[in-house]
Figure (tube, rainbow over the protein chains, first blue to last red):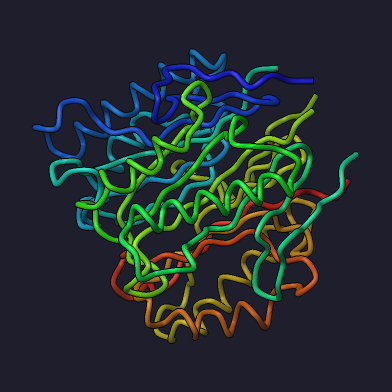
Length: 118
Length: 118
Length: 118
């Protein structure tokens, strides 16, 4: 038996939902949107670290991730932050596609599924 | 042990697939596409209610959702329907991104993952 | 208890990650990008077959899939390959949306979640 646990929740969405050993994170964006995509990605990855900690896990247990970027020409700069952050021995399944995001200055949004520690 | 159960299926896709306590719903669009995005979202949310019922669950057990809207400027109107529908104590992880959908008159498509009741 | 298994991995992402009976595949694109979307889709579906085999499962156990196509007008041609490949008795939940992909010549990218055999 397992219980659904919701954290960093508001009336619209939850930052992280855990159930049956899996953590589902919201699509995360940067708070400081005045910086370029690499800096925005770094902010998001720090938020992911925090939410994974709340969920009792860490980036070595990522399962799947979807990365939305506002302009595919920025992919390499996003990837610089990704490659500096990711555990190279424990990389998730990943898709990266272009999508316009919540506001023009939002250059990247990342959604992650991870497993909790056992 | 668990069995994969597929409901509302055709030769292309299934409306809802359940396995090991999780319900995976198809990307849903409205049937009446002559209405604005708020009305289309309301139709989709009713379909989600129906599919969750078929899967033995309900909107209080949503885990994750991806919302695609055809124009980000319509997000607030989509969100009016979302906020009126969602269980505010049990909100899922959520991403909302812009994407052109199956036809120009389709303004919103929603894909949901939920847990079944135990 | 379950272990996370990663296959076809590099320092950026894994082709397939399995955990607790579920296989999460990366967003897959074709290798030969000189062909039209139907041919690209066929290549991707062969890759999915291979990754599902590595994960100890097959296309009869698909749970959910997200299909990104670069131009919604190409959906029917993508679907010809999909319909020829999919097990019509065992179709997954599916969403298909338009998104610009990693390079202009990439016309389709597919991400799949499946269950392993028991």
